[in-house]
Image (cartoon, rainbow over all chains, first blue to last red; front, side, top):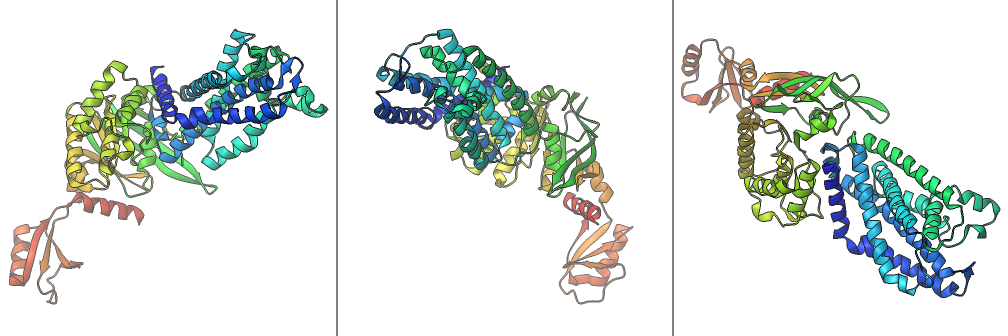
Length: 251
Length: 303
């Protein structure tokens, strides 16, 4: 296991070297979303919840999903381009441990980004609270790991930046934007609110809101099952892809 | 115990929808403590074979066995990798990290305990003449320094078997000498070394035994000296000032030189001196250099 932790430490060091891009860039995006929606819709509310507080809690979840996916995804593509992927192929570390080391580094980056974002912005958000602290801890850990594993899966799969950017633009971003970050699920017309239930990102965002402000579009129990289930599926797929790709010459 | 045992190793890739066998039923046995050469022209399958040994290329199911000091590289992958060091052909360096960081994390990935890493890094860098580059950015090193850093990476965990895939390609003469010395020193300390090279004088000087592969197949293996002897032809090579003179019976022209096979060296020399006299520019008794053996072997295999 020590071997795996050395790889984890290396990946943490990597994002520490690029703080502006890895930590502050997502925070700037979040602040821009908040500024735009805050100004335009500050008078609106969803039930008892201020609209700014509603989207803020969703945006925090979005940070973890984005950081989780992009950190290992792009690190692996860079490693393929530079040829340093061979370090992973020859090192005595099991394929699943390589995947988990990258996913844990992604989680760490997500948590650091989350803490910095909260410290900088939480003071401007009305009625912020932590309704369920244990649930918050669990969903932070699970979301970072879950999308970290997805990032490893696609980072291993993609041959180059184009393929990974394609997945980010045409798969992940639509999933995030249709997950209910910016609107409650009930606001969608009939078939789409049901379709959204099959979007795994929705359940992460839903549990973030539940843990922070005790609001949920979908029953938290359902969301926990979906998050745990998809985490296991992502782990299985990630392990399979790591074994497959680390056993062949990567071009 | 054998440092490396390869039995019937094969690897098939699919290229443009067609199966292509890069390595064909290769078998080789390398005794512990040797410096062993793996030779072959470009595209012979050397790097694929090395990939199969170091775990970056999965062997075909028909492969009987590849094991490092008794550890099978497929069924005991991690145990085999722990005692293997590899210096890949291409220089691949993490550009974001310093030399120290590259070595610190990589040795950690091989399980070198935190407390031992600094000492090992210092020793490896000193052996390779990079001790003043500890805090330098890896990407700012010169090509030769990067090559040395690659070797440092591979020896930090003190492997029992070290594979160097063309370690002296593109390095200057003094660095090549330094790498040779390091290879010999590591071997004296007990590390078994395999290396591939295009510089045949390297194999001639360093290796005790070698395998020559071409088009994925082993075409020759054995002790370097005995292979040289096998290919050694009793031949006098000579040059003439004036080449437009009647040739002696049995003499054949090869480029600007002439060759005369012999059975009795002193008799043939006498005949040659009598016939050509002062027209002889130079002459020498030809023994088979590894270069010639290599060319002969690979040409034979192609035809």
